Image (tube, rainbow, N blue to C red; front, side, top):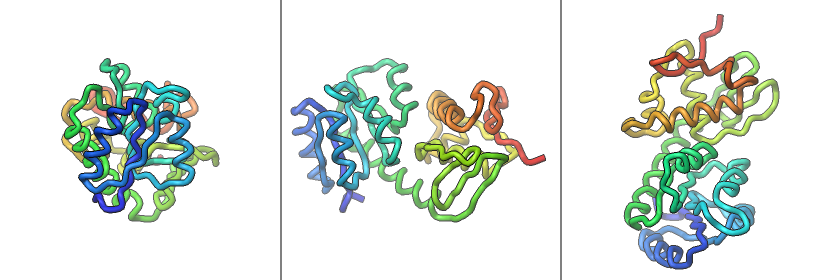
Length: 234
């Protein structure tokens, strides 16, 4: 896994950069470094990056704004670093495209474990979701499995890998109600472990992107007390 894998570490604290540089190099990762969001965007124009560790509080362009910009064109895993420990801050980070959230101060070994976990999941995700061809059409919603693209009324919709995986999972099981624990286990490839908020946040963001009125969804329906579904054709 580590051979040829490039990690982009973004933090304006030099001590953290120096510390993690030792750990990443010991694991055989290629490490790129940046101190703010603007540097990240410049690096991504010329470098292939497999995972980004992104500090939230940085000068010039913070991690939240940088993540939004990154997700316009890239789908690699993003792990947030932040001194903010409130659940609302974690949910905000996940809702705009983050895959994990680590609070400062952190254990370097724990961060390394999370990096490896995200890389493994992303590799499995690519193999599973990019391996087959096919197009799913649901009214004006078109999901192209081969090209990993989605359109609504012929307009391109940019989804994160998790959002695309959830949409494809529901579309492949039209007419069936999938519980939040099933969705989590299928998309995140790990036990549910009380992750309702994570699924709900991703469903909300997905609806905001594909539904004309997210409060009255045409595609992703809520079955209260059970889960979510996309209806079968009439």
